[in-house]
Length: 78
Image 1 (tube, helix red, strand yellow):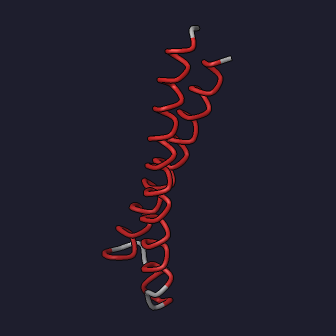
Image 2: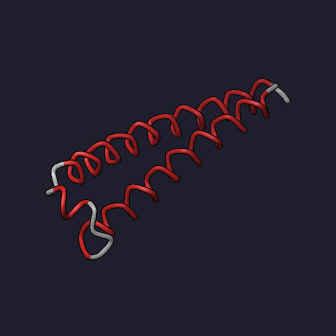
Image 3: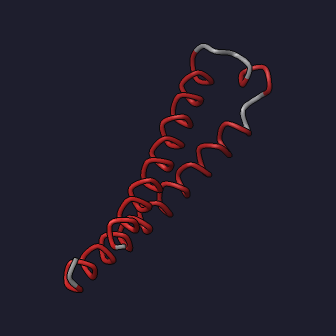
């Protein structure tokens, strides 16, 4: 791989790291919202609590996948 393509990968990695930070911010906000729900509602699988758990799972998956993409790009430069 030439230096020009490595620089392009570095640029993409930098953008993804910014997006990873944004995902982390949203994830933290959603976790705080969930944590502030009444305990009885948190334990319910219906309605708002179930939706909140699903959102948290999707955000965690997005975070993990983005980290994996960054790792793959780092490996591609080697």
